[in-house]
Length: 209
Image 1 (cartoon, rainbow, N blue to C red):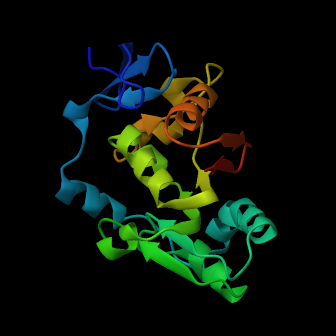
Image 2 (cartoon, rainbow, N blue to C red):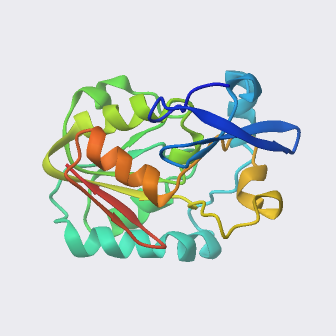
C-alpha cells in the first residue's frame, strides 16, 4: 500500500468508488486516490476547461463570498496577494480588484507565469485547489515559502470526516479531486510545513506563516 502523499505514513485500503481506488492515512486521516488513477496532464486540463467559473455567475460569487469577506476584513488593499490556481475564471481576484486590491494570478495550466513563484506575498488565495494537489506535502511547502513572515494562506475545500458517507459524497466524484483533507491533516500541515497556526472554519481555512 502506498504511503500518504502528505505525511508519508502508512495508509490502509478505503475502497473503490467511481472506478478509482482510495486509501486512508492512519496518522493524518486524509483520504486519497492512489497515483495509478491520476489523470494525464492533457486529460486534467481538459476537465478544468469544463468548469463553469464565470466571474459573473451569481451562484459562484455566493459560494466564494465568505472567503472574500475574510480577506477584505484582514488584509489591506495595498497588500501583495496571489491567487494560486486561479483557473479560467479568477472570480475572487476580480471581486477583490473592485475593492482596490491588486492580485497576481497563477495557474499551472492557464496562467503559468513562473516568475510569480519567485516572489513573496502577504497573502495567498487557494480556493478549491488543494484537493487537486497530487503531492500536497511539496505543494504546501511551496506555498509556505511564498509567504512573507506573518503572511496568510486562505484556503477553501470540502473537508472529510467520519460522519460523511464517502460512497455518496459528491465531492469525491470529480476525477481531478485526488486528496481529501481532515481537520487532523490540516493541523499536521501547520505543524510540519512551516506554518505557525491553522484556523479551521466551515467556509474558510486559514494558515498563518
